[in-house]
Length: 63
Ligand SMILES: [Zn+2]
Image (cartoon, rainbow, N blue to C red; front, side):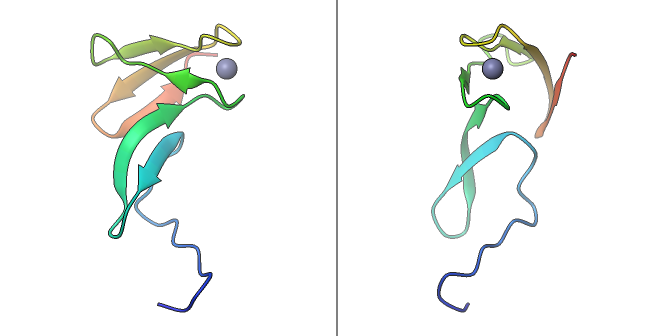
């Protein structure tokens, strides 16, 4: 892999990834707030109150 290359394939929207290979370590709102899927399915951004739903590794905003 070339230095500085950014591999974004297989990284779901809103996912926070780390490591190589990339691993999902968390989820982030479009505003940058950290999302916590306490029940595994829904989260509300603590910063902007936007709701999100999660299905497997797919997260979408409710709005
Ligand atoms: Zn937010």
